[in-house]
Image 1: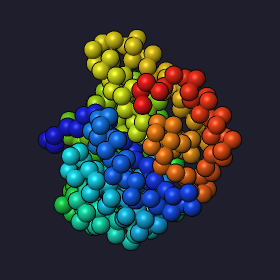
Image 2 (image 1 turned 90 degrees about the vertical axis):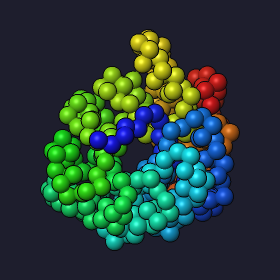
Image 3 (image 1 turned 180 degrees about the horizontal axis):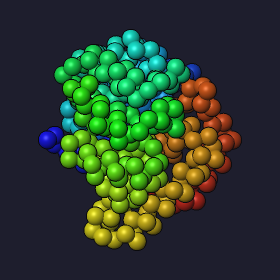
Image 4 (image 1 turned 120 degrees about the vertical axis):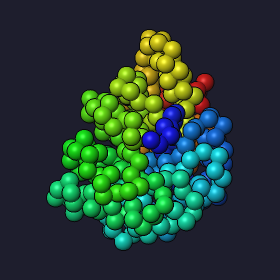
Length: 301
């Protein structure tokens, strides 16, 4: 039985210069910011890190920079999913050589697998490129379009993927997450992946979570977890509502571009997003910041 991970993993941003090029020199500062919160681990080059929008070389630069900056103080998981199997295998091999503690992959999103078996075969090929490194499946059907039965996946995947260790569960179907935790939680790590629903995840058995807003509100979420564990559900709900309201404002400003802009509000500018994600204009940022400031979140940064 593998040792269970607890706490919050930040799905890290890929910092960029104003011209859209990768700003790897900013990564050590981001890493220290997260370690001070404290964050229990990093998830690099996933959706939050705009992994699908970066070149393979850029992804390798970002992952290597985070791994070097953390220097084994906390685990670093690297997302290596790619619609090109060969590129995904190259990313997996590079992550392993760079010292990643684990790799993760989403299924292909353009030509989607026609069956659960096809998805598992695809992921097995990726995992085989890093045969000594733990492997996690990134379950995010609302983005990937891979909508196969996750319970059946957990039954079948370990038979084909020797390094399989669990799932980053970023679907909003909490009842299925609970079923996964109850049935497979003693064998595999099931990370909860919906920040604005963390209290729901805790009620369903979550002990570890991966999310984008943990980059700047880790202290708030730590307090939610602590309050819930102590049985103070009312406080946990009250604090979770701050998260819900913040996320609601972010989605009024196109979601991820606004969430990335939150880092600037928190004092650590990670730059623009890459098209087709549209960076907030100067006017949008001013009104967005005003709305965020009105929520009273500054004490939690």
